[in-house]
Length: 257
Image 1 (tube, rainbow, N blue to C red):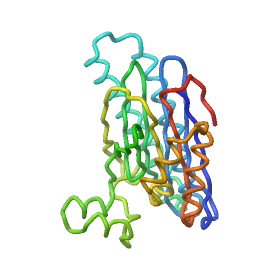
Image 2: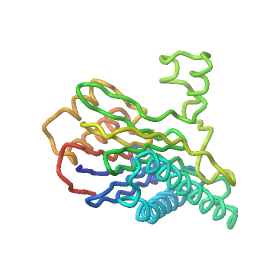
Image 3: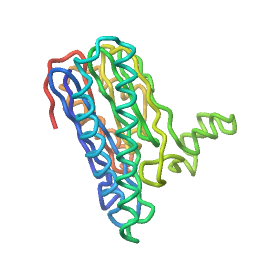
Image 4: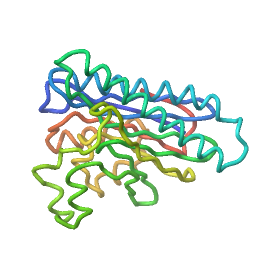
């Protein structure tokens, strides 16, 4: 696998509150994207803390799992538990830190990530940062937003067309660090050919299936594709910070950042 991550401040914000982390060796890949929120620089602090905490906990836990569990079902359950632990630890770290200074009150962050090892891929998310799979001319969203708009969609109160420009589309219902505990959605599947994309809503808010497919299906390098996705969001207005981590499963091991 080849992976590249890129973050951009966008065209409207004064501070980039997005962060991402990538770690890869010949046995496994971990990638995390976080999109912070909060006054002053609290959002940037929350997203950076969460990214670092999630990555470190997953590395520590997976070292005890990968190559040591032969049964596939047991492996999947063990990684599920590791992801849940990583998100819980990150939530506690951000929440506890927010209590140390009034300027940090209410800070939090979304989180979306991927763990890939032994032919299996795990996807986890809290908030509205997303994961996609792109292959064979099709794009599949692998995560469900924890947002007000998604709740309205699920309840049948608005249409998908109304959701695109809904005035409350940035309101999220779940985030790391806002409360003392948080639930993380976790799913797993067999690794598939193609590309996996992790992104903040600064990119997904400009989602255009045809344009995304054109970029991903091009002969460009994985870094050039990620840069093109960032450029697409800026061309659309760049109203928020933009982060994209792109994982190409069909190319050789080479982590870029």
